[in-house]
Image (cartoon, rainbow, N blue to C red; front, side):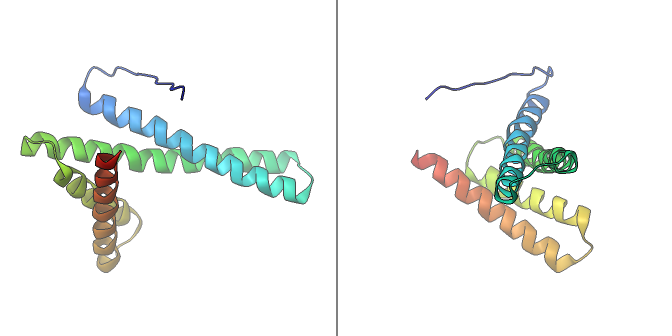
Length: 135
């Protein structure tokens, strides 16, 4: 399978990883938004400039949001790895939990929701890390 990899050198490994994650996951999220809206346009059978403008705004919003979340996660995981001095699944768990809590706290003051999102972030990141070991 062909692979395209674009590298943006920011002069710092932390920045390189976070920017890379932002662009990769952000572009996936923008593509998903475009595909979803394309489905709705095909279903309706018509497209207007308003629909097109709405799709572009949605692509930018989704791409920026998920790209930011990915950048924060990768930065957190890298930071935890540097602090702990080891590379293992625990970095993913801690990075995911910190990211879940941070993203949740930015949009909510509900402590229970922040705790649940931290647990979810840690669980999802840990599961993804273990799945990476299988492949």
